[in-house]
Length: 193
Image: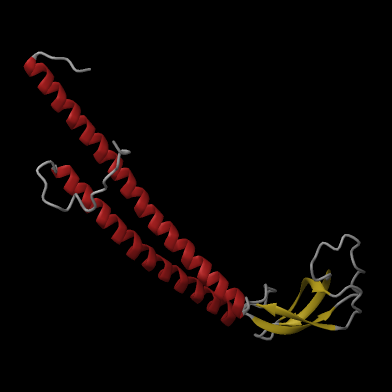
């Protein structure tokens, strides 16, 4: 006698079968619909999120301007800790915004920059200092990661819902089997368990 072999019958929920129950057909449609919805919904959510990130990057680029700022007072020397990666220090600067108004605030300047030297700073529409816009590579990375994460989250949510639905169907199926066994046992006066 050879080892026991397991035979897997694929697509059994879609074939004609005398043992197939209505819950099996419902489960088959839930699985099919869940996978289709997860793939299409994930793709759509990813594309929408990537488009949204791309529009935000373009808006940031459109609202930022680079202006020349004048260092107001001598900048301090380099910090011994060198916490910043660009080795810059905070210094007081003055600049003219695109609307013609004059502003003064702290910005990152080279260490020991003398008063009167100029540095480039990025400002927004109101003339306040802002971070420089992201580069082309950073924009691509943000767009790709935003789309991928949104797609994965949307698809995962649908697949998780499908899994919970299948668990509920399994519990309902087991409850029906238990009720059927109880009915058969009591009709003949037996007790199987």
